[in-house]
Image 1: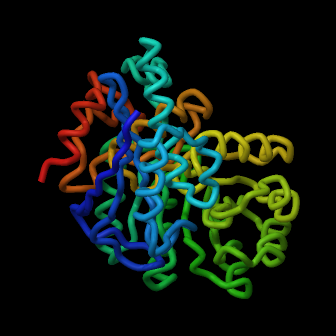
Image 2: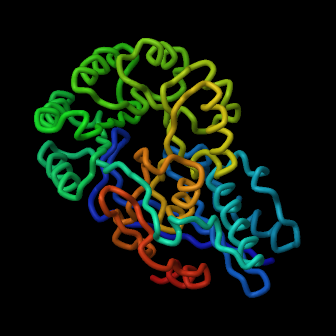
Length: 350
């Protein structure tokens, strides 16, 4: 087996606003395996400023991995626990290679065959008041019944006015509203904000305070009037059960690229079930290559009727083309996906 990697810079169609700043582009890497005429690709979508493997020598780790494989040593993905995005890419590429050699479809399901869709939320990026309102109108016109709204970047009063307007027109039975703070608030300001959000029947808030404040987050989860979902809090954690036993959130958000792949995500799922904690799967701005793998996993392991946080593949000017489609707020594979050999040529096109 031979291995190599390639890089691609994905360019956003519109600036993507978060409480950590505005994104204009995102770098991603692809691990490519060739063996006996078969090609398998896994995406290593390390997220600058967020992934625990955002290190200066990241590409050197990819080089070292490829050297190991090229010398005849096939490492287990679990050996890359410190590099979750690389672990994810290796797990996916090896899984695809094994499936191809057995004459099977990788993680086959009715979703892959276009027979069923996965319920998803519509994502509302941070922006000006008018920009966010316009995004919401577009999502509602497209039939979404669950929206996730990024908050914490513009004035709280402006964000609250949008939430008020939504609730004046759509009850919670008509529209599920999630908010994602990305750690924007403090332990002292968060309780009042949670109380306000509860008045407008917000479904849940993701990461109200920044990660690492374990005692403060545990107190918030114990006293909150609305469910709290941990997101960034999970990154870099190697003992899921210990963290969940301490904080006891109402939900956790599973991002396979940031957690270390599907086996790592299954470990989080198992730990969550032991504490009766809910969860859903979310993509982390991967290209369509990674999104495809995550959607396959989500169909098999998740609740396809509970809105998941899967992207739609339409954020970037130069994404890898895939036959994805959103219909009735569900995410579908609408056609035959490319083979990985075809994908490699698409990925390396300039």
